[in-house]
Amino acid sequence: MDSPVTLTQATIDAYILYARDTKGLNFVALSEKDFDLSDTEWSDSRSRAAAFTSASFVAFSAFEWGDAGYGDFGHRPVYYLTDDQPLLRSGVTAILPRPGFDEAAVIRLAASLERSSEHPLAAAIIAAAQARDLGIPVREELRRLVVHGVLHVTGHDHPAGPPRVRSPMWRRQERYLARFGGGAR
Image 1 (cartoon, rainbow, N blue to C red):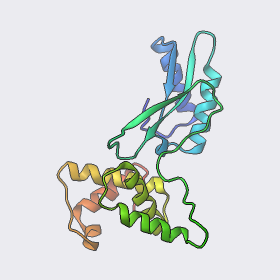
Image 2 (image 1 turned 180 degrees about the vertical axis):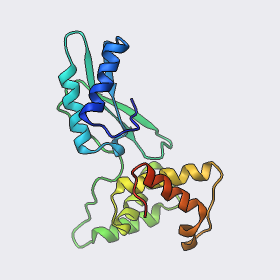
Image 3 (image 1 turned 90 degrees about the horizontal axis):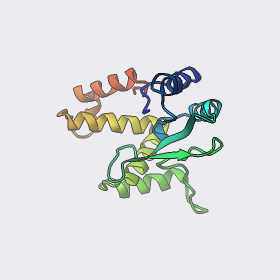
Image 4 (image 1 turned 45 degrees about the vertical axis):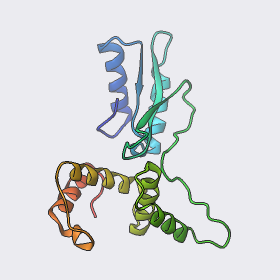
């Protein structure tokens, strides 16, 4: 399942019960994209999978790992055979500058070097730099980039530079983000 709702014990239980009791499945994996999955949701997902696993039914702990833009690599399902495994997040997880270098300066430099790249890791570096500059979580900036890209693909556009934040496309983007919990700026 790629969940459009926040995963809670109740939604996880409902999903697993539907798979087991309504559809008669012998196994199921509840998964969400790593960058959309909170630590609490991951913990709840693992504990509920363990609670429902029996001799005749297996609920796997799982998540989808990959870049936010689903570019060259797409997203890949990760299944665990035990319920004590970590959630591995794609994207930038830490910046470890050498002694004498400032973390913020390193991420800004890396982002400036990656601006013209289409590689998924470049998008993660740029998102991390933008999120840091805006004081928002990287997860929120990744959502913004996905919505922004979808709007471009569906024919929307905006002027270059600072006026873009006053454009109809930007306002539409922010409405979608507010509606789906991505936070508007």
